[in-house]
Length: 297
Image (cartoon, rainbow, N blue to C red; front, side, top):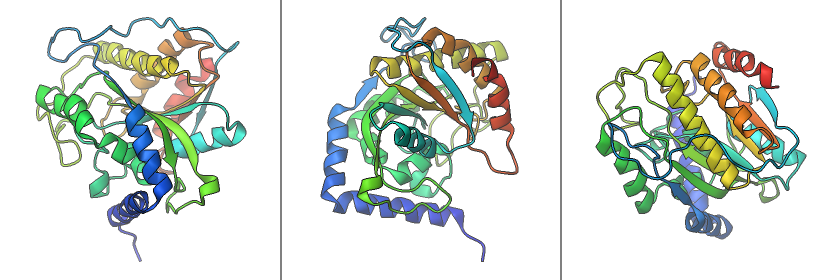
């Protein structure tokens, strides 16, 4: 019998949300994360808008480690993070959420299978993003600006609890196996010919950008993400093929952007782990990132 993946995803998500409502410890964790969530406004507004905060240029953070280890694997994001936490539970570990700029959780309520939706199905992340404050500051902002390149605005949600297994058939984990992680949400440029859909309502005009400008934009976004992680003294980062799935960014350009920006942060983090999960029949993103970041490994 063929599995209906969307229906399965919706069932997993709804079960998680019910669990968060029913379990007092999880309810308290959600409220605590909401209180400590930090919104980082866009450093440059789309469509030639005026500057909003300091532009993320070159990094200037203290080096806390002799070197930064870089690893590329084919793990899912939370699976990679839980692996790192098992090695050293005391290390602050942050996961990059490849966020929808216009919808909290992207298409998680509709059963989408992209990375953000997976994170929301397995953890306390979704209710922490789905707040009136973030709706106004982040999601409505991007809907109203009608630019599918979006901005480098970030949302930092500390102490998210991962409560389900990160695999093809997620199941509830016992409390002793729950994993506490920080999540940085940021949107990659949306390069689809039809940017707006039910999962990401908003800009209807396709983005037009040259390869050179796209590399510069992705480097700026990478620098902002790394700066947010550094400001919050993260030890280990779980990154990935940011924007190379549903948003159609070329993996060669994305990998190059990270490879050129990461040396600016050498020694700031203990480890940067690129978790590039791919279907077995299409390993392109993993292979490109493995090759593109090899000189840093």
